[in-house]
Image (cartoon, rainbow, N blue to C red; front, side, top):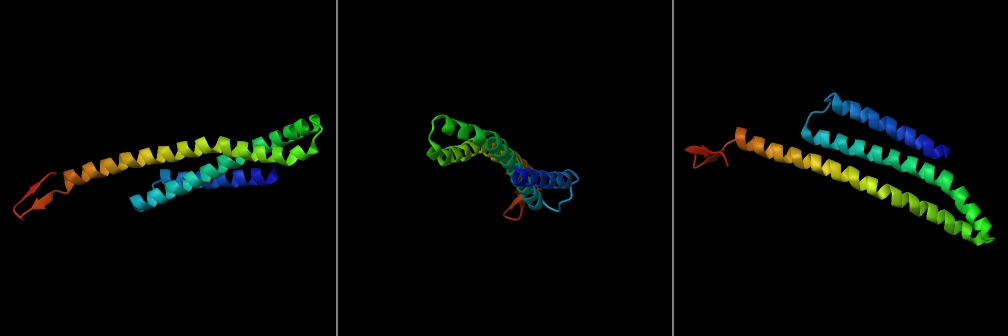
Length: 134
């Protein structure tokens, strides 16, 4: 429990530091912004994962051990622990997908804005005589 608490706290502090850096516009290019966003997503994901694991394992394992004891079958305990880890994975997966989908949709908006901006401000020259806004 203490390891997961420490890992979750460390990850959320790193996430907050990177988020502050992004909000203060402390990056040189769009590519550097994307790298910072990827890092912040990674640390947020790691924090959420640690907190879900902390909750499920701290509350779930004692419960599952009691279930195994209630069945008078102590050989079920390793299976119950594996079920607890599976539940962690099951709970974390949709959150990871949401984080990735949000970032992809944000970047798709940026890419379409950049494409529209490049068409307006950087005309394509044809035959060296005139230009067109493609």
